[in-house]
Length: 93
Image (tube, rainbow, N blue to C red; front, side):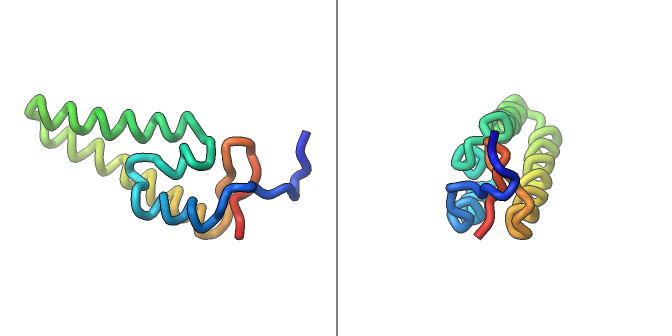
């Protein structure tokens, strides 16, 4: 069991940068070893592409917007140092 004060060994700067630049793709989640969130982001991107290819631009846009809102929320939590890595450790400076 880990201490509550134990912080993530992952770089805060790298996590914030990945979220800001590649947030919709979920690269920051993979970096922080938060596999389910990362796979969910990738699934949303794949769904959006699938909707667009099949001729449903409204659903594609809605899916991308949902992923973008999710990314903005995670980005905010990373900035204020309230997000945790896949092991439950806070990602801080």
